[in-house]
Amino acid sequence: MIVNYSAEGWEIITQRAHGLLSAQIAMQWRKKDRPERWTETVLAIADHDDAQIELEANDLLTPLGGPVNYKMKLFEAGHCRRLQNFSLSKSRYIGLLCSMHMVFLHQKEAETNPEAKRFLNEQIKLQQIWRKELNISEMEASRIYALMEWCDALSLLLCQHEVQPELRIIEISQGPDKKQYKLMQNKNGSLTVKPWPFENASFTLNVEYRIINQLQFKDCDQFKAEFLKAEVNEKVWVMENLL
Image 1 (cartoon, rainbow, N blue to C red):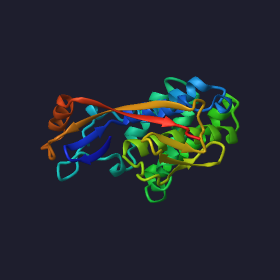
Image 2: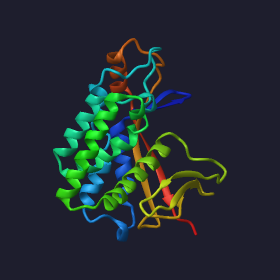
Image 3: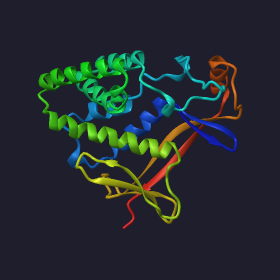
Image 4: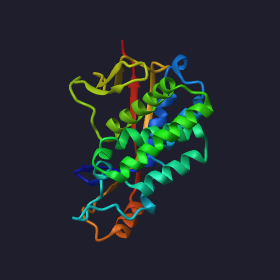
């Protein structure tokens, strides 16, 4: 989960909600540059965090009893296996993209974690098999995954309040066209991306979040109970290409 500290308490955005926001971003991508298997691509982007279900987890708290932010998580073989199974149960194409995402996330950790290294080596071999079966070149798969990673990166910037004030720019990521994209706030309060990669000149994005005003929890069950009791709110962003 994505955890932000606010004046009211912990702001919680679930991993699956973040994935849904990533898919909303992908749906706006310019039509001429969308991959051929567009529906599956959007589903892969939406599903890339689907194995992380907070209400079913038992590792939600820090040693001090606060909620664990996703950045604190390390490689977990069980979680990665679940994601692999979830994605493959839809299609090999979705399995391929989610597998590439796991390699992207854990490649540095694999340098010092033998279990992570074994898992990622297995994934790389499976990716070769799936690309051949799907008749997708390694270059094309990398281009499609770059879109997935880009949408993920923009979603995380929004969810973590990373938008800079006073027209300052923050880098998003390199897109599938190998251009470096940047995010900034317009003078009217809307957001823009430069260069503009989307089909429409303006659209809205949204994500659900909860505020939990209790700062410390005795166990995961108490946190889950407070999470379920919390009011569901919605963040909305207006995206505009102002010339």
